[in-house]
Length: 214
Image 1 (cartoon, one colour):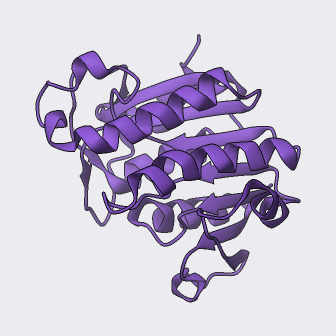
Image 2 (tube, rainbow, N blue to C red; image 1 turned 135 degrees about the horizontal axis):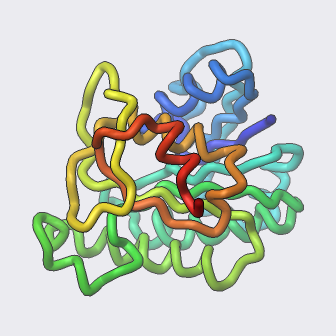
C-alpha cells in the first residue's frame, strides 16, 4: 500500500516510517522540512503545509491508499495544526477518495471528564485540540478511521512489543510500541471505527490488535 504520513519528521513518525517500509509499504512523507525526512528506499519526502487549503492538500495525497495524521505542533500552533490541520486533511482525504485514515491522538482526548486525572491537566489545551479533531473524524466524515490514544510518550531504542488496550488511567508508552500499533492497524479492518486507548503492557501487539472487536 502507499501511505501518506502527515508530520513525517516527528518522533513517532520516524519509527512508523521504518515499520511501514519493513512491511513492504511505500511512504509519501509529508513534512514542513522534507529535507529532514528519513532517507530510506520506498520513502518519498514532500513539503506539507497544514495551513494550506483543502484542495492542494487533496492533490498532495492523491494516489495514496491510506493517510496517517501524526503531526503535532508541540503546543505552538494547536488550532491551525493539531485541530484544524487534522480536519482539513480529513476533508482532503475524502476529496481524494481515500477511505483509510489513522489518527494519532492523546489518551482520553474524547473524554474531557477524565482530564483532571494524573498529569493530563498539564496538557489541557493540547487535549482540547485533539478532542475537536477526533470528534470531527468520528461524527463528520465517512472515513474508515482508527484513532490511537496513547498516554505519555517515552523515548526508547526499542519497544517491548507488548501493550495494554482499554486502559483506565494514563500510563507510559514507549514510542516504538506506539509506532508499531499504528503500523499494525493499517490493514486491520476490525479496528475501523474504533478508538484504541493504550499503554505499554503484557499482550503482544499483534494479539492485542487482533482481539479488538472480537
